Each structure stands twice: as structure tokens, then as C-alpha cells.
Length: 191
Image 1 (cartoon, rainbow, N blue to C red):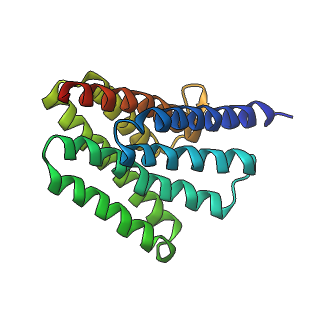
Image 2: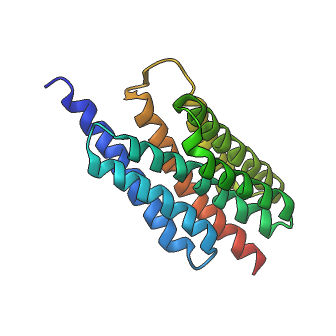
């Protein structure tokens, strides 16, 4: 019975991440379909984890990892591509695709480090582009995604009042919401 609040917190964090990501995917489709696909991957991974319950299996962990190494570079791709930095956009997306293909050959710890590195690189590059284009939503999203990536490397099991993984999902949901508005703002300025 003591695990009940933790289970509810975990399920709620997956639910919020899934809803925010799905909402972002739907509204980003008009702006950029690649970024919408990145949001959709996050929503599908959250939905798969939500359906599996409190004990995620190996397939759900792999789905979450693939959503990270492909979905986040898809989001970063649009930020770079629209601003004329096509080489960085292609490099991020290509590296994510190679990691996704090589995922079966990596052990669990290597997958975790690679996923966190991809998330951090995507966050930092979006943050840099957002600072230079004065996109406040992009800055906020980059900071939230960077915080989620850094929190996942901490040794503590609880952060504030949440389990570490739940806090990371809350930060990722906040970052996804901010990225949705950053992409919208970026494309409005270009029109």
C-alpha cells in the first residue's frame, strides 16, 4: 500500500508527457512534420509505458530509448534547418538514427549514457539557436530538456517530492510544451 502514491505519480507523469507530446505533435504538423514525428515518438513511448503499468518491460524501455535518440534529434533538426545550419541538423539526425540501429548491440548502461548524451546535445544546440534568434520558448525548452538529462544522471532516487524518473518526465513534458511554442514562434517570424 505504501507504493501506491509512487505508482500514481509515475502513471500521472507518463500521462502528462503523453498528452503534452501528442498535443504538440498535432499542432506542429502544420509547421514541420519532422518535429511532429519527434513529438509523436515521445507520445507513443509514454503511452506504451502507461499501458504496461508500474513494472516496465524491456520492450518499453527500448521504445523510450528509441524515442529519445530519434525523437529529440527530429525536434532539433527543424531548429537548425530553418536557420540555415543544415550540416548540424543532418549530423544530429544521422547520429540518432545510427544509435537507434545499434541499440540492440549496446548494453543497458551504454544505452542510458547514449540517450542522455543525445538529449543533452539536442537541448544545448536548440538552446544556442534559440539564444541567437531570441526565441524565449526555445530557451525555456532547452533548459527544461537539459535539466531532465542532467537529473537522470544524479545518484539520488528522489528529487524534490518526486521519484527521479518522474521528475525527468515532468521536465521533459515542460520542455515539449515549450518546444511546440518555440517552433510555432520560429515559423511565424519566417512568414
